[in-house]
Image (cartoon, rainbow, N blue to C red; front, side, top):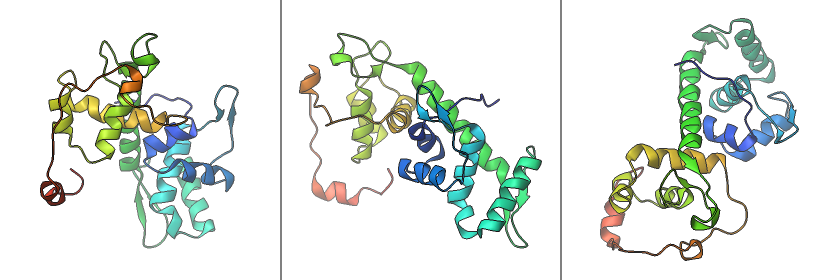
Length: 207
């Protein structure tokens, strides 16, 4: 799959590289990645910046500043290299990092195609195309411990993939202000499901 180049906001970069937004800004302030600005979005990051972010927070933090810069310089000089030697003992799998970033970037693009805001539908809250399913609500449910299977059962219009897209889209587009309730959006709860504390406690983490 070819990776399409684009400019990322700090929030988008954080969602794709799977690190905190605060860490992205910290990397820019410390000049770990180049400082760029977009007239529309402010700070802007490239695909190369995302690779640096992922490597910095993956292995770069255990390297000295000199070795870290040597690692980045070597990658710049050998853009097609699958692995790069960071020092005498550490070899970095750059190809794997690129694959992970490419997959996440494609997921974000897919999510942006699948999600829309329509005036008059849930107050303009982002929803999946041709549905009234609020994307942020789905992401919040997942973050609060609901499984993908439970969410799809409660929202038959969704697929497991759409739940994944809700997560990365919401991470890339954090809401401003207080979270809105379903009732505020004109939605009503048609059914509910109780989960005993014992069952919740016994649920494997990460599900």
